[in-house]
Length: 393
Image (cartoon, rainbow, N blue to C red):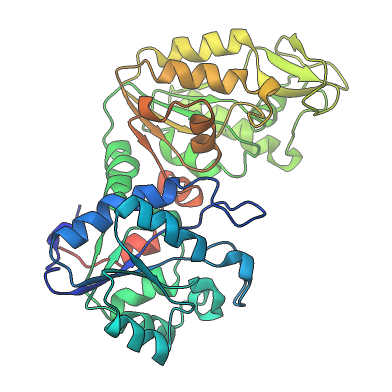
């Protein structure tokens, strides 16, 4: 990697400022329901302290408070979880900039400090240089370990680097390795599985990866726009009418490149999307009035047969409405099969990561990305501002 990492920085005796991604889900009592993102930053936290850093100042956003102080988006619930995971006392400040915070950071006896939600200030998302400078004044060196926001040019991801020497944390380095380096130079055959609701979300990924892979396997809601483009009946299934021509052109492009786009050959259908709805399995054509909610057993067999020889697999997007158990069988079956392969298996974050967690398959995958939008943009071949802004080696 041409960018500096935390391993290249001199941390001894320094106050290290670190951008983490603690944008974790909370329930109505403000208890954390999934601490994956916090756990994923612990190796970097421990590495920094192990290198003899004087203090570690952590900053993050949570939710979308839109530049205002909103209690339900406070990072305070993260403190107890951080203390448990690191075994260190954590000092919390109820703001992230200002004279009080600066003096408090300097005076704190704790090794780990957590600042309040960056997005309580509109200047964060506005990438305001003065705000970035105020954040930078809290540390001697900057580490970015927040892959989930690396696609945003915000003050704490792309602005702060102008004032401090910076490097990627261990998590960000791992994301770059798998989503960047491995995908750029994959062990072959290289297969891509795409799902989720919309074709429009995945156009860039298809266009970027089609020339590099042997096949793109498509399921989920986006498959029905492709099937419609092939002249199939899709009943009342998810359709992006304005993307039918685009889907057809992508199918034509695949043929011209002698690549395969593999679509479902049977479907689980219902009359209404309800977990209690009666399901039936139909072939490639979906009857009028019916809605496809999952891929059928023949499709699972077809997809798994295609994947059997793969040496690298990237999976982004579930193959059905996996949140409802009745419609999750296709996603689970393909996920379980992936877990048996002797291949590098890379899971693009968001819903796919949630599906893998639901079926307890995390340990079977090579890498599960912590970034939804960021992983998509990386797979599209885009330059992410949070990575581009890091100091060059």
